[in-house]
Length: 133
Image (tube, rainbow, N blue to C red):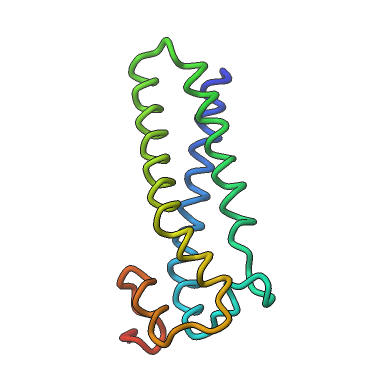
């Protein structure tokens, strides 16, 4: 197995891990924290999402760069890897512009404005007690 193939496999595994983390966060954490904000506030004993997301992104980005570097001469492979990297960075830019500032706001808030958490989170996924049947 070449370094490029191994790096691509590791990047694919890392992308799968981040997808799983996003699904877990959307289906479980995002449903629970509006009622109990302290679960996403590390200073109050809640989870620190950075402990998952930072290593997960690094675990994807490093091997994808190695895969691109080692596969540069293979045009179809290079194109697909560059597309994957561009998609990843578009997602990261969106996260940094919208989700990260909002998450920091919620993590640092002492008290949440009534209804604010319900209005901004969840992407329409019903939370317990809010339309879930």
